[in-house]
Each structure stands twice: as C-alpha cells, then as structure tokens.
Image (tube, rainbow, N blue to C red; front, side):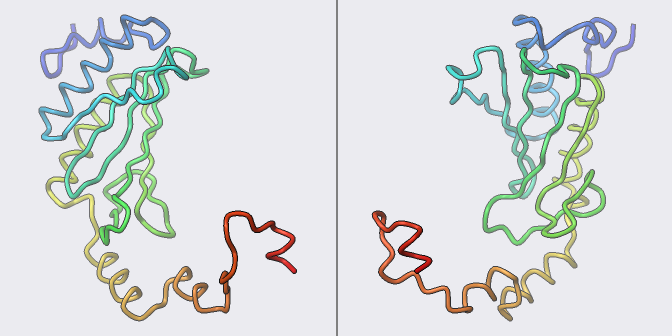
Length: 180
C-alpha cells in the first residue's frame, strides 16, 4: 500500500470522477492536502444547476494566487486535471519559472496539467508551498511591470490614447452608428 499524507493511494487511484461518491472523496482529499499546505479552500457551487455532475474547489494560496480544481463526471478525460493558477486582477505580482507553463506575455497565469489524483495532489502541494515561500513569484518581472505602468508603456495604456473617443455612445447605440 502506497501512503502519503495518511491516504491509501492504491485505493485512491481507483477513484473516478464519473462516480458521484468518488467525486466527493476526490474533492475531500484535495481539500485536506491544500488546507494542510496553508491554502484556503472553498467549494464552488454557483453553477450546480448547469453542471450537476461536477464538484469544484477554489484554492487560494500565497499573495492571492488562486486556481480551481474540478472533478467533472461528464468530462471526456476524467483523470486529466488542468488547473490554471491566476493572480488577482490589479495585482503587480508576476509568476516565476518555478510555476508550470507560465504565460509569457503577462506572467499572471500558470497552467498545471496533472495525470491522476496523486499527481494533482503532489503538484498542488508543491505550488502552494512555492506561493507561500515566494519562489512562485518573480520580483524582477514585478518591478518591470511597475516601471511600464508608471511610464504608460503597456499596450493597453498606449491604445487608450489613440483617439478612441466613445463620447455619445450609449447602450442603445448600434455598431453601424459607431463605425459611421
């Protein structure tokens, strides 16, 4: 029997998101491991009517980094977990190379791909630890973002000054009127 965190992983490896009781058990395992690592875990229940065969958890770790883990009974790949770590809107933080598959444009999203519950649990535990230790974040990227913000060098800041005047455009304005 393989155990880690007092979990029988041989038995856990037979759990499937296709079975309702297993989805709940899988979520309980991930919840316990993430809480032990220091993260805040909440159940996502806002779309239960649309996705009745899904159990989802929102995990928030160091510096506000968050991800959602979903166990979906209707998934075409129920044992493949794709979790996207995000940073809060307006945050100056930037992910470092310690995180998996970091978006190379804004460095505020990192994508985790895990095959099976064990890989998911281990990866989440490591990434949560990295967010709390600071390894998950890149101070140089953060300083560069702050410099560009102060200088108005971000593409979205430059676009704002290009004469895109929306004065007179209201909720009843049609696209034809805007383009005319």
